Length: 91
Image 1: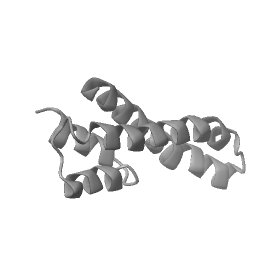
Image 2: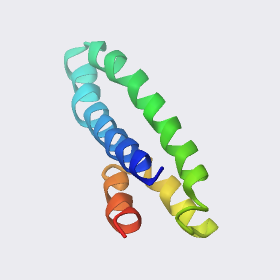
Image 3: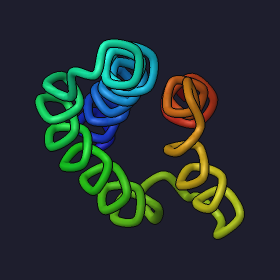
Image 4: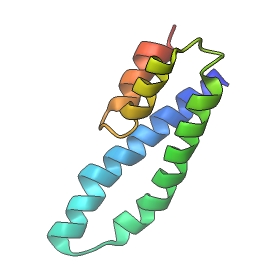
């Protein structure tokens, strides 16, 4: 389960960065929302999967409620999921 969470964490982080730093600027600079539409749904699914897996894996990883909160907040911060993977999942 830990490896699945790590994979989803990395994919969610990549999808968030693509959406934030590539698709959104293209939408507002060029007026083309195609990339936002293309990346939005996969990112949303990965985000929900990340949250659900974090809650499910909490007991297995012996995370406190505070740690779980940090893990969940990191999902909305650019590069946050990469930090979580390095700090909490590579032990």
